[in-house]
Image 1 (cartoon, each protein chain N blue to C red):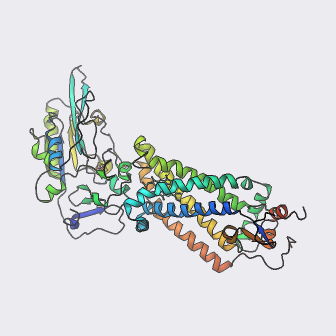
Image 2 (image 1 turned 45 degrees about the horizontal axis):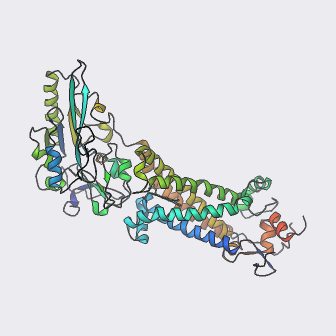
Image 3 (image 1 turned 180 degrees about the horizontal axis):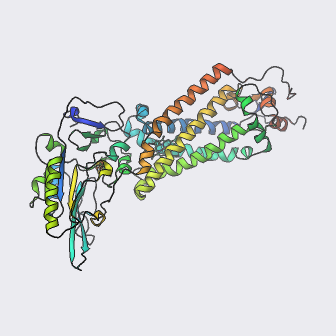
Length: 294
Length: 213
Ligand code: HEM
Ligand code: SF4
């Protein structure tokens, strides 16, 4: 992947020179997950493991429909089920397809210390180039959505690739292809936003006053978006953050302080050397005898 | 004088065991520092080549750090008493400008360590403590999974800042040893000259030679 699409790489982890910029006008793509249309059948989960050749170990039922219980190195997408009580006392399922959001400003990429282990393509997809991964887990600290998982088998981080391999040859992601209710759509980000707004209008007509598209601007928008029935309460969708942002700790750690600190370390060595050549060594001169000082 | 003193004209400053400890810590510190810096900023990533690539650097760094810290602890216990604050320290710091400017008129009654050396000692103690604690928290795959992501974020910042402080202290420490002639041999051969001791550490000199109090 990395070499095939290198002209399309617009951001590369731990790289301080510009990536190739020749191509222009590559359309931004996005996946839109319409939570209101999702029936929780998990066909997308199956399609994801099938296309990517991933198989999760068979686990235990933990008392909810979530299965497996969490994202993992082998589970890149997962339906999370929240049973909510409505104002009128009735119950409703909020079923969220969890996985990488493909942030426009990806915290994982910012945090990664290994050159080229995480890239962002011109179309907006954030991809882990696993052969460059060193297994430090910094991406986990960078991600505002708690997505990347380190494999116990090979100590490399994994997450949804938005089927970058399929998208590169003009196919839609496996989950999109398989969804029986067309709750998952894929196309240009503009088209998806437009379609999302149409769905929001429909939902509002049906009484979901707070319906909305989830495209959080704190991370520059995302290339995986949701249509939520209750966009005013994203937290109700099993921990979807209301205002996701790269943590301030991570901003400080990976921000301006680093190049300055690196420069200061170098300058301190240079300073010491210059001190030596300007002031000379500190030598005990011959006059000092047995502690008889001036 | 101890019988290991190599000659009557020289004073024993460090016993073989202390010298060995010091250099084990030094080698460990350099290896931990170089491997850690590789992750600190992309401009240092080339250092992973010294350790067999990114994966190996990531694996080795914490092990090196912990082994180094174990030796460091013993060193600290052995050097602790001589590094407790004393009256001469403030006096020494008040002359810092003259000392650094190489215009020293020694008047502080310095013991085995001067104020600057004690400062380096305590900065190292605190920063290495912070490094070992946060480093273990960050250690994958063994310990990091037990902590929440917020703790990990804090730990990595504290680790990076402490490493920066420790490395700066190390630059000061190494340069001071090179700059003050006759010092390196204290750690390589164990001995210093009478003149060196009387000039830089008069109180210590009187103590070890038993000369006028
Ligand atoms: C004492 C035991 C130590 C442990 C257990 C430890 C552990 C770690 C771990 C787990 C990391 C994250 C990267 C990785 O997984 O390898 C790390 C990063 C780092 N370590 Fe250590 N370390 C120790 C000591 C040191 C020392 C003595 C130094 C410097 C003198 C140092 C400097 C660094 C630096 C600069 C980083 C990169 C931080 C960043 O990315 O901002 N470490 N250490
Ligand atoms: S959701 Fe997390 S893993 Fe995905 S792009 Fe954003 S920061 Fe990276």
